[in-house]
Image (tube, rainbow, N blue to C red; front, side, top):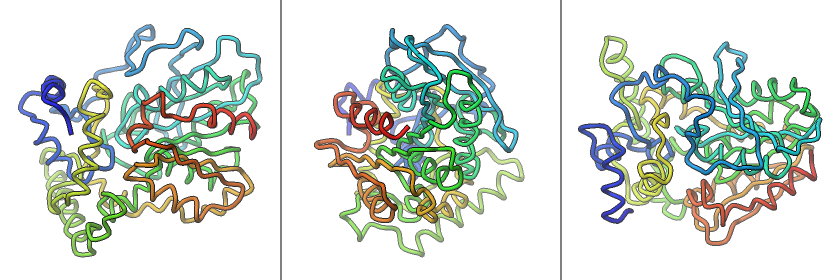
Length: 369
């Protein structure tokens, strides 16, 4: 996965007592799902408090053409969300707006912030939020996966954007990267205020946890029913342990060993999340006890409800996750568009600005919002 220099960089970012191999092993399937990150010794990352307003704590450079502001708002279940709001300096409102969602276990200072800032350079008001229970957003316990809450967060972002005087509330779209692609599709099925939907490197998280991730061309490495039951049993036992006061465990557990294609996916994520390229102190693997909730998530169940709103589904030509996007496209109603980016892998579309199809994304939203 990495050169010797990357290994040393990674070691500097991990907390005492954590080697890169230990983190990969601890995270298991969750690492392959994009939850792998620097893992602090305690779950109370929110207690660190927000970054100062004038501090630039992102993994990408600040744009001189965009105004940045940190905002807070509350979702339907009472969780206060923290988000970065980006506006073009030459904004003439009311303008079209985009909700931008981050990968699983990520935070707004990484991929979603890069997308939000770049789309703001192209004329949109954009909002990149931290998911409930994660990043700077509130919610306890910390670093759990509640898929209902994650989908709700997108509608809460629409609530906020649609009440800003500089936003046209009838021209709000959504752009989800990795797992947030699935959350964005789910939100659009139940929230008609989202007028156009784009996904990039989309993950169907429920299917990912059921199948065990990996590369689609290796069907023999998809988890069996028995392996899925073993993983769920481990998570269920952990619930008892934590209820009785045991330390919280993060990641996908170790009841089922990673198969070669699953390990390759985990290594690809590690090359982003555990190196200076994408590491951020608030990005964190999610709890093992979240496994049951994630496994039951089916973001394509009512995909027909997105019609007649347009969908743009983007994936890398070489992405291990490409099949999620292609399967979503096959089930999606018209109008829909599939864009395969030549030479791009899954994580390439997190931050490789030379590969991300900015012109097509901006053109899609300008056409439909």
